[in-house]
Image (cartoon, rainbow, N blue to C red; front, side, top):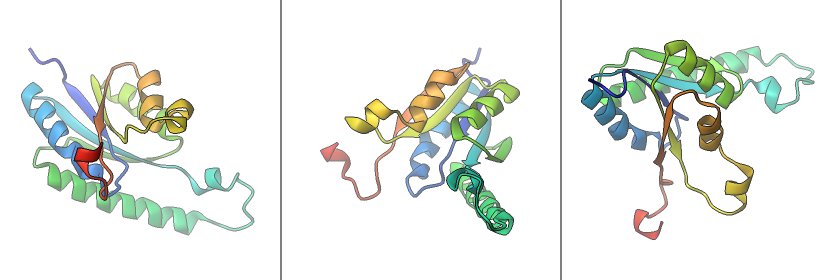
Length: 152
């Protein structure tokens, strides 16, 4: 019997995102689970408070297309069947929780930079996902591309 049947991998599509691939692939294979990928784009109106006197829809469309392309590339790097690739728009933690609930996910995998001090006190995306999830959350330690693992 599998512990996890549906795994949702939250990907920020940064240069460090590939570090989630091994864990996601291994867990999905070991549990014979379906694997879904999600990337959340915060709408430009969020970033500018919604009071921007210009139409940002073409820029938003370009961001969405770019995210779809990068998520497709990430999916191919996994070397494991991916059931769904989801690019959604909204608040990151809220959208990941919503999608996990809709998919009936057993596990959410998210990258964490493992910051300390003030960043830890203020919280992080991984922390927000953990505290609102209705399933298990695996935070995978992600190293900055210029960071030496031995120094961490």
